[in-house]
Image (cartoon, rainbow, N blue to C red; front, side, top):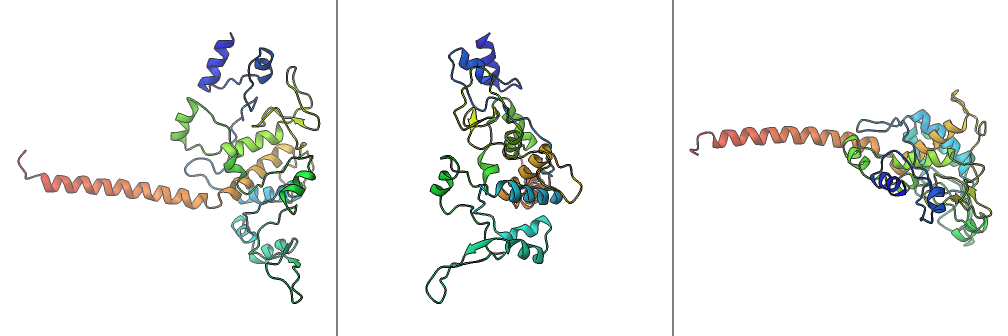
Length: 282
């Protein structure tokens, strides 16, 4: 029976092996213990686009629930205009943050000033050591590219189908499932270190140092969207995908145009070949 289950896992077929069951039999568990459930995203597929309303909600969730620990060092404030904000709104939002000026003042001292649209989101900690010291020794990762840097391998045969469906949402799927996947108690056979929180969707172990960051009613939405954990997780996952790949829509449009060009070019090459060789004896 154990060999049969491991065979299914090797094939990547929808059934997930329980890490606790393997550990009980002396096997090495593989993480995540539960693979992410694929979600429905507006930006999925070759013609997918970002939902600006969702991205604005995701920004709000990030600022109110995530920014206290996680930085976004590579995201400038001016890029928020892509979310539908005006220049004045971006300037007002940036001014809510303080950054250190790149040049000293008249006395040669470095000083803090309100951020400008050209500045990037400031980190909540001065350095990685301070970040780790403030979070029980765990350095919270930067969120700039997290949606592209974190994903679960889907294995065979799913990765074959992904080639044709253009599946590239592994990062948002993983982030969403991680945010909603916390459980109060670990199953028998799973050891959770003290000070960590059990989450079978975590890619690096059975538990992580971050407590559940979201809860129902935590963030107030102005557009009437549900204020639930599920909605928060969807919105912030989509926002982090945009942060990691803000030019995805342009890339997809260019790819589609290139395919049309190649099809027309291939047709012209074929017709030219027919014309050139039509009167040549074979």
